[in-house]
Length: 218
Image (cartoon, rainbow, N blue to C red; front, side, top):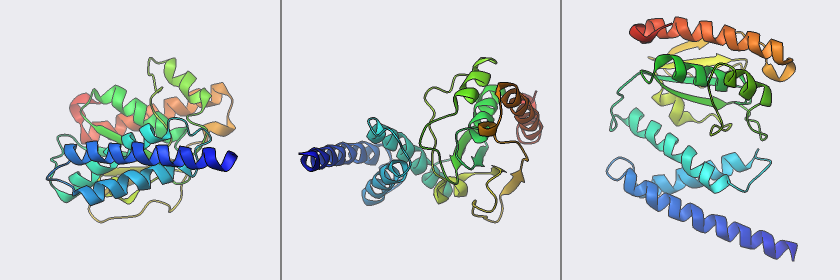
């Protein structure tokens, strides 16, 4: 009986993913071929599934993740124009530092920078509650964000890649700017410690924005 339920769930997810691939193929028609779209959708589902502790909403998260990856792929191929600079933040689990950096960058830049984040070994339990708390204290909500694995397409699309404690996990491509911010891991800190890291990240973000989007720094 358990095996049958598992097979039914797999078939159900498969059908949902095929429908997601069809929707995305329409959105990216003329930019990415349908076979690539379907491959990215199923790859995204498998990548998220390797670490997710709760799989109820995995197909919908996979569609969101695939959409972002396909956008990055189209940007790197030059078939989608970059209206603003692209910044990629990478930490180990994509549940703390990189999520805070991405959220603060969106907040401070006012949309003048597009941000992605990823993890070299993403967490399966979501964003750290302490990170959600300290961002909420400064008026930033991250309820729709989730840990994502690092993929080649988002690195290729980035203009600046900022790493935080993930060592050499991020592939290096010529012509991109790479920065490494040395920050404590929020998973190992109490709430006051996480606040300190938040404020350190804010200072780093403001400095970065002063260089790539000066009119919106501070």
